[in-house]
Structure formats: C-alpha cells, structure tokens
Image 1: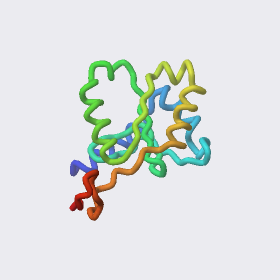
Image 2 (image 1 turned 180 degrees about the vertical axis):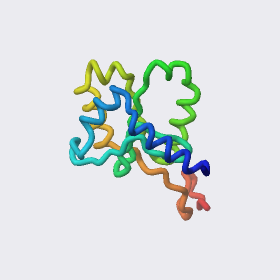
Image 3 (image 1 turned 90 degrees about the vertical axis):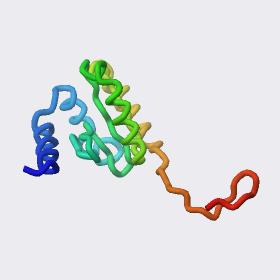
Image 4 (image 1 turned 30 degrees about the vertical axis):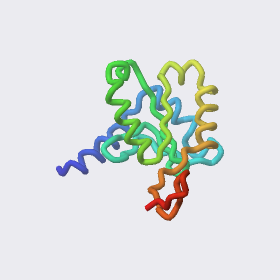
Length: 135
C-alpha cells in the first residue's frame, strides 16, 4: 500500500476510534452547530492529521492528553508548520473539555470570528520605510 493510502487509512481509523473527549467536543461542533461553520475531524493536512479543522476559517482544534506533555517539541514543530500554512491552532487539555465545555466553545467561537490573517507572499512594487522600491 502506498504511503499516501496508509496515511488516509490512518485518518479514517482515527475517525472510527475517537476518544471520549473527542466524541464530546465533536457532538458540540458537528453539523455546523457553531455559527454555521463546518468542521472536519481527524483530517490530514500535509504530513499531519489534525483533530478538528474548519477549513473555511482556517482554524484547527487540537485536544491534548497526558501524552502531549512528553512530546512538546513535536507539537511545537507541528504547530509551526500548520501556522505557516495559514491556520490558527488552538489547543485544549482533555480535562478542560470535560470540566469547562462552555468555556472551550467560547474560545472556539472567538477563533472563528477572528481567524488568522492569510500568509501572503510579497508581491513587490511596494516601498520600504526609506522609500526604496521593493522587489
């Protein structure tokens, strides 16, 4: 099986075997329940699979359990790449979802209302602070 097929298969496997915390949040954000925004779950992006993503607003939601305390460097690299692609990544600890789901939903709503600015390549023709033409 080619690597890309294995990756897609893994995403499907994760969708079919969600954690209880993922199920709880998914029940609150699926079917456009938050201001009509569509979310996908366990979605491949680049070489990563994100927990939840709203492509329309470029917002990613990641749920972190205790395993993330030991993989902090990996999570930072992953987040940096996702942000370089123009996504805003918001993270919640699993216990936050269970103990304060309304607060979690408020943070998600705020992220959707104030999405990240797109990463645009320089177009040239502008001027710097000294008035010099930029390429």
